[in-house]
Amino acid sequence: MRAIWKGAVSFGLVSVPVKVYAATGTNDVRFHQVHEADGGRIRYKRVCSVDGEEVSYPEIAKAYETADGEQVVLTDEDLDQLPLSTSREIDVVEFVPSDQVDPVLFNKAYYLEPERTALKPYTLLREALRATDRVAVVKVALRQRESLAILRVRDDVISLQTLLWPDEVREASFDVLSSEVELRPQETTMAASLVESLAGDFDPDAFSDGYAAAVTELVEAKISAGDVRRPPAEGEEEAGEGAQVVDLLSALQRSVDRARRDRGEEPAEEAPAPARRRTPAAEEPAEDAGDDAAPEAPAPRRRRTASSSKGTSSKGAASKTTASKSTASKGTAKGSTSGGAKGTASKGSASKGSEEEAAPARRTRKKSA
Image 1: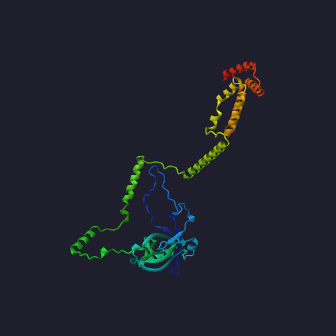
Image 2: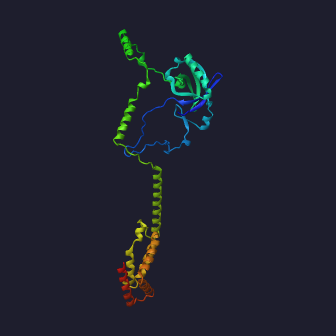
Image 3: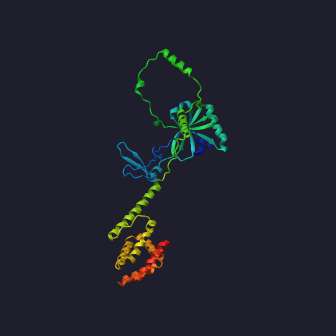
């Protein structure tokens, strides 16, 4: 166990340093709320009822609601001014007979462990309570709240039992109990006989939580049958950031396409870059245009290629690479193409000799390919 509080029991001139431990704890079978469809955990958020925004802890204040629906907001500065006892003392107020404390007042139980140097006064207090059959009424500040409590002996340990304040206990006022009921002596005798037949000494270890045991057995049976599944990974924040990145890229792409349309250019293609660079068929029209087309045909083809490269900025580098690869692979056809280009610039016709020289070169390149 881990101590939750350290202080001292003070009665008269005697002070007993002690540590406080929680004496009770629940062993309930705990469940998580999940989405039945996919097993995702159900989370709860602190949301403002006015603007619908999620509110963090530093922005949350305490408010008291009046009878007419008004609110009184209390800040941390207001709460710091309250007369809260911060002393580390369990102050004994009086010693009273143990049967005078109604068990309905019992709240939470704690164990008091003495410091090794305070074992003698601790033992002295314990034996005094046991010999006089009394409990010590004390005041203690636990968890930033002053509580009324009693010190009583349980086996060899002094137990600190916090009590409810009198205004926290509700009155049992039932009108039906005010009606008079006549009991015959035979009925009273029979009821007493039934009580005696079921009489015994109370042993809490003889009882068990049947519901918890049944739930545990059910869970273990499902595990043995393999009826389990791994919960999905929680990636809400990562998914949100990814969606924002995708939206941003999509918005930028639309902006670029709009700007190109305003300039009278074609929008960029969305196909992957490798697919755009792999266009071997684009080289053959350039050869055919240089050899078979009319002398005026190559110039418009170059202008169309230039406008296409301007319209698609992402294809500029790829088109230049394709042109350089085409020029390097043509070999002797380079001279034929350059000769055709020069002839076009001077508005002259290409000689048949150059065409005949270009044809064997083209056939040679096709065979090698």
